[in-house]
Image (tube, rainbow, N blue to C red; front, side, top):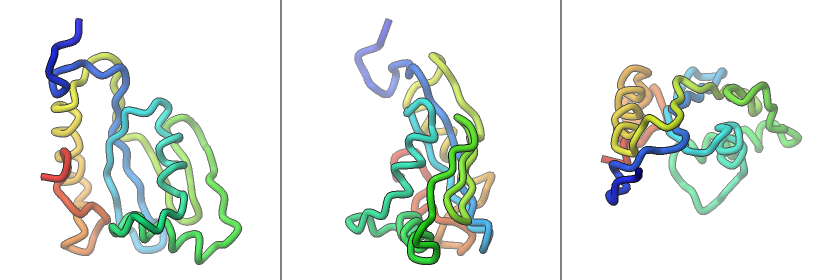
Length: 131
């Protein structure tokens, strides 16, 4: 039975994923509730000029560097886009709340050292909804 607060509602599916730029080693850690997660990644690879954060800029650069690049589905938990590789770090079914997922994202960003301010990644915030 779902709790009224969305932060405490159990999510049907949740995942933390990792993307790495194989050219420069920069990393990105994100979360998704989209199952399978490769659908989320495919959306992120579309060149959207309204998004100006580092990760979106990197996705546009792939398209510029490799004009005929295609999203390459490897499995439900792995994919490639040009010189980017995506992979699920962990996934849960019917056991995580949004708050728990946010905490896992924060932990993943810390573990993979993916903050953009130190030059090693594309994450602009420490995760968990931008805090």
